Length: 227
Length: 227
DNA sequence: TTTGCCCAACCTTAACAAAACCTTAAAAAA
DNA sequence: TTTTTTAAGGTTTTGTTAAGGTTGGGCAAA
Image (cartoon, rainbow over all chains, first blue to last red; front, top):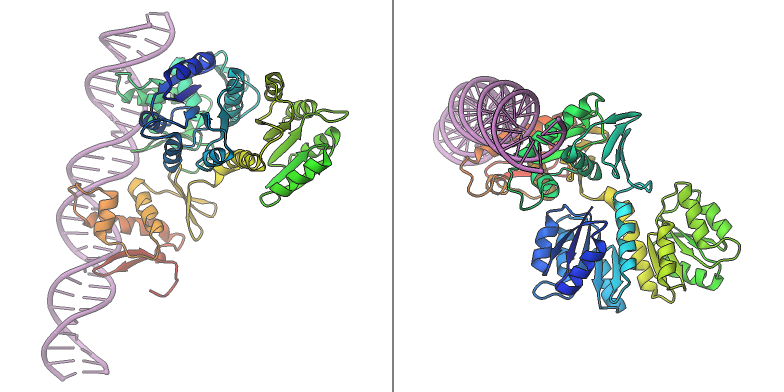
């Protein structure tokens, strides 16, 4: 689970990071532009967004993001508690709105509620695609009764694909998400991992669902015959 | 959009109904049992749930609901503003938590945000021309049930045409848009792609809508026989 | 006004070129 | 050891070009 904190107050940002560290892989941005840039990579599961920031404020960031079809859940975190501010926040596409000061627990709860829904399934820690199940807790995968052996990054890749089924993910997105921004390996590793993953799923005929889109990327599709 | 209000205070329930009536088809339940019974029908898009009710309180209703795998989004509405109450609410499966007294607008905004997410994802990113639909998210096209296989630039061309239906686009415009300004291929490729696209649409008789205008360019036209 | 011819613009096809991707295996790192 | 990365060669798809066929408007002669 990846969380992006866009907040110019470094003390607060750090404190949020601390409280969320157990549940999330946290990235921080300290102004609007940086936040927008990171969020555009579309590799986060949820974003915490401050409103009052220099240069580019939170509303602008969010508006721009939605315009670019990035639908990552966003929770606005701000001292502005007027109803007009809230209206504006929701209008530009926020999913939740929390007023400072707040309880750390409440933030955590709201984050979890959000992620739980976007990742689907209330049965915690199990992610499914047809009869294929990922047990996130111990990083094992199974189809029916049979356990499939997937190594670390193969598992991550499959998880990412399932979480975004029926949407094309570019190699860059996949790479950024799994290998991290400043990894210095080339994005062709993605091809290798796609290939290995397919090989492992072939036995169960699940490789067919991993479609490649030339010049675009990969997609996990639950449609059968269609492209 | 169907909304269920589970609230024993009839005055408040009625007032909520009034504010939400424009956007939702509203049902009301005035105690926990009734609320649970209705919610179990699983026909609602979102539920507003009060906590303090006689016999069966809101926590119990929600817990029971989730146990039965009803995942309808639930927003808890209560006078209890202690953090422990919130924790309990989210723990049993709430998606949002709003403390009384509240602004009607805020309730409405939160309801919308919730619905937008659970329903919205389906409608998004579909571009249509008559019965032909482009799914921008996964770059597939379909007419009715049938999926049409279009490769990258053919899809782009069709998308561009649909976005500008009933206006003539010159070959230069098309070329600049799809191939990019400083591409060094000649604009005659546009003709080839128009041809290929027509061939792919011929099967469904949709090739007729792509009209050629000598010396001007191409146009996708609604009208049947006429120019 | 009509007819017939010419030419430019456009269509279509097929062959070739070039990306993009797949797979494997070996080297490197953990 | 197991996992990750790099490299290389093979495969497939897509992009591009060129050539020949088709269409339709302009224009002159009837």
